[in-house]
Image: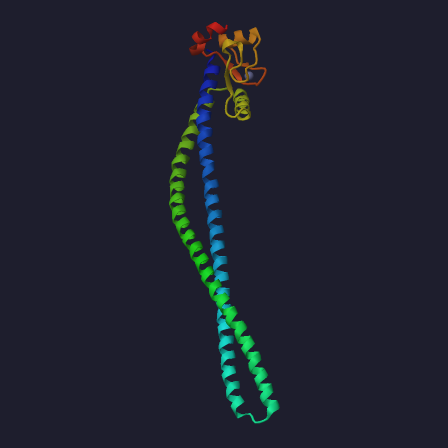
Length: 244
Ligand SMILES: [Zn+2]
């Protein structure tokens, strides 16, 4: 077999290993980013829940104070009522007491609603905090694991690149460029068998001349259909005899 063809087959092998490792390596920052975005969202949600909880609490305190003030005012007005001799003034104070009663009653209802809202919001806040804590701990382990994987993969990618470079030295630079172009354009498969007179990748029927050239293995032959480099796989020959 043409040594150039042997080199291309070897190149197909090492470049596949290299690309696979590179892809795994590229996945790591993507996953890290995903984790950070996910955590940030959970933190934001917990922050918003805390904010809402605090607002309800403040409102509850305010209504409590207002109600307390209203009740004290009512006691004062009631005491005042005992000392009033003038009927007009008596009626006016009575009206004030009624108005205070209405306000106090509204505030009591509002207070019940707010106590309920604070309780509910406290539950939501605790759920959010618990989920955040749990996720943080899970993600910390995953991030530590990713860091380890990244270091290991980095070495493997480096080694694979060196192996590709080693093979590249035996390949003509122009041929190498062509090979890489096909390799990248064809999802990492630059070689195809010519056994049986068909391209093993795109199945196009090869001209008898192309097939003979591929079988002889003394030239660089390219499939007219998919541009992949053709080679004759002699290990398949016996199986293919029937098809020839
Ligand atoms: Zn083809």
